[in-house]
Length: 130
Image 1 (cartoon, rainbow, N blue to C red):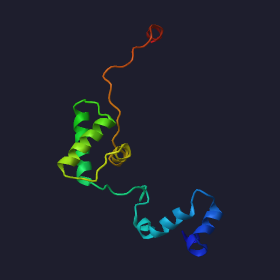
Image 2: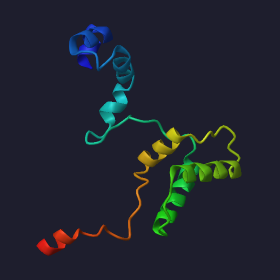
Image 3: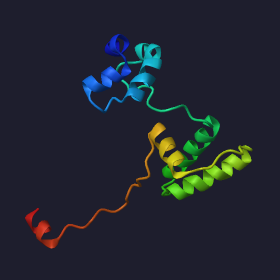
Image 4: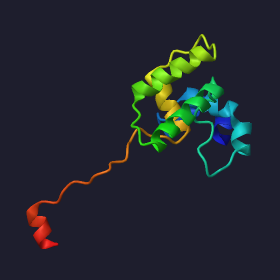
């Protein structure tokens, strides 16, 4: 950031290569004050805040409840429930896309994996070795 302040955004791109593009450097320079205040051990300012936090909270609780009861949850089920809740909450501009679902899962540390009750049986030859 200091190099960008001294020489400019395009000079940084030329000097350090193409991954930090001029636009990326410009955005980070705008966020400089927030980045200095931020916790150094966490990835900060990587994603935006949720547009519908109450909706996300309800969907998160719904997912957690289903998983506690041993019910497998798919992305399609999450989107159907989210759209239903959006209608109940009278949210008109909610599209409920798969990318929205992926972002809510990432923000809340959730995944679509389910626990299996049974394990695979070992082959006969493996049982003899054990």
